[in-house]
Amino acid sequence: MRRFKWSNKMLVAMALVFGMLLAASLSIGLPFADQSQQALAEGQAPQMEWDKTFGGADNEWGWRVQQTADGGYIIAGTTRSYGAGIADVWLIKTDAVGDELWNKTFGGLDFDRGYWVQQTSDGGYLIAGRTSSYGAGSYDVWLIKTDASGDEQWNKTFGGSESDYGYCVQQTSDGGYLIAGTTYSYGAGSEDVWLIKADASGDEQWNKTFGGSGYDGGYCVQQTSDSGYITAGYTRSYGAGDRDVWLIKTDSDGNEQWNKTFGGSGDDYGYSAQQTSDGGYIIAGYTESYGAGGDDAWLIKTDAGGDELWNKTFGGSGGDYSYSVQQTSDGGYTIAGETRSYGAGDYDGWLIKTDASGDELWNKTFGDSDYDGGYGVQQTTDGGYAIAGCTDSYGAGGENVWLIKVAGEKQPLPAAPPTGGFPVWAWVIIGIGAAAVIGIIIWRGRRWARI
Image 1 (cartoon, rainbow, N blue to C red):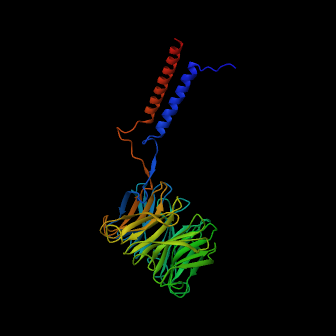
Image 2: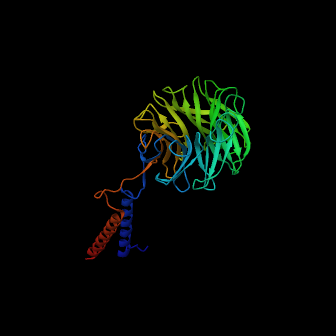
Image 3: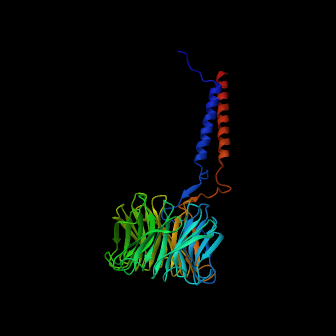
């Protein structure tokens, strides 16, 4: 058999390949290689990126925020500093860093409030609230539609001779709208949950009331995957205690399919509900019946039939409340509210992040010596969080609308220090140089072997 012989060219080529592999492996392992993000330490809350206040000499409140298609934010609230009357609905549009682009007020000479905003499929905005300037009764549900610049296209009132409130609105899959609120004018008892379905022009298609002889109210609504609706609120007509959290599921025509109550002997409220990725539901509110303090933030998870899977309380010895919940991209939940147990002041804005089982991962407070609260939260496209609320600690007047942006759990890696580590291109040169040296040694070694 003929013996295989290694040529000089083959040995040099192998040395070059070895050098390149060495360079690649070193560069990948560098502490300052091109890795854009790192995870926060366990239990560590992300940092606030920025915050903005909006307001004048009087009081303002921000109830809901949504990130818009252009990367900015839209806020719905109430102003007493601007507008035509004692209090007006206030719509504020900002850019991606919270700087105001425009604001609009809506209202008459009396009290008008905006509680919810959603960007619609045509790029405009939809606001739900209540008005005592217009309509039939003391207060009427008020639905306002604007274009992309915030200019009113139409508005509609719904109500009877008593007080009726609209707290939440969602655009539905047919292009219409569904409003959730509370009515004193209609229903079985003193106060009932009220769902109103409108077409794309805001004209009523149907309405449904839910309740018994006591006081019952609805705060939020969402269209579910089966085209029905889920609404959350409270009931004094049913359940175990003074007031219980109330979850109601309807079909697409607003007919009740089931309802569930949650609570103990005290007052328990549900302010926000959402269908989760497993087909069940998540509810945020507060409880006087359970937890560590007088009132505690309360998170309840149910299955698709509304039966409780687990519940968690958050709080200390003071009053602690949650007003908004959203399932996050990692399957967990983020909750916005206010706390008197923790933080710097009277009440502080409060953001809580949990895992998919409701166990707290971290929490963060916002505020100073006066009253500060968080009412709405949304996870943003960069993985962070936007919170709408109000602050008496900062801003121009009494209470101001407050917009807070918090970074996500993944943080940018620090830049490489001037003297620390080598850039990737340096390691490539070192690797090629090493290969060349190895090749020369091999080549000379074979020459010496022939002498």
